[in-house]
View 1 (cartoon, helix red, strand yellow):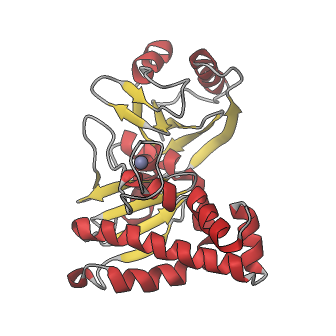
View 2 (cartoon, helix red, strand yellow):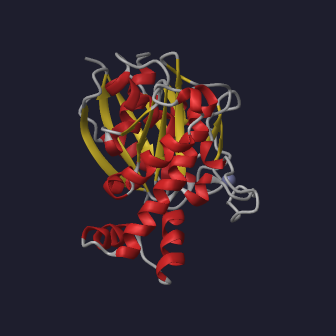
View 3 (cartoon, protein in one colour):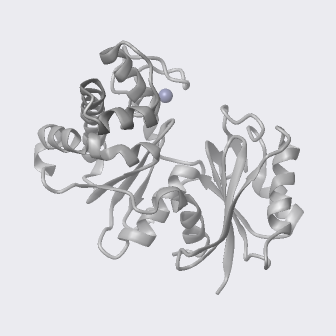
Length: 293
Ligand SMILES: [Zn+2]
């Protein structure tokens, strides 16, 4: 069976694997980008390609940022080694191979959908809860795509007087429903700093401040999900990313609040579920899109 090389690009390393049309991943590994430059990035991809057991049918690249598909131009201000670069053209000419580029959250959404929900669901939203708040939208069984990467849900504001986001606006979900947002809630409640792993440990021992912080986080997340539901009443909203691992501490408050605030006519029509593919969703989604699944 044909396999595609899926790259999940991070700030200092690239996660990679050979993926077939069943979503099975082989030769999975992480490669450090040794030199912090575009050349360093290309060198890392070269070393990944050299070590593969067979030539792939193509390459898919999941980017932590925006991408202009028409101009083949990356918009990733937080990842300066790739910002403004023409990755598709460059990789295609270096390796003489077909290359597909998409935003990482969009690919994760498509991976979750194709290898988990395609048989039973037509319209779905997938959100990643991590250092930011990202996502992708599946409409009538297809990933919503255009000539620029879509669904920047993290930059939907829930408070126009709220904290300023990296994008310049105030009150973005990226600031509130991310790990940074959870830490800010905890700081306001407990009067001290923490990190998500610690907070999970505190909550597991019944720490009242940590449990309260998670409860409040769940309430905010419900607000985000209710906004998404209002857009087009998807059959399902799925959430993944690092913070989804701690969902046992906020799932209840989130579902309660969601049922309270969802647009009344849509009540009972939108399921909320945790993702199943974890950090492999992006690679699987790259393959799914490449093979036209
Ligand atoms: Zn923003």
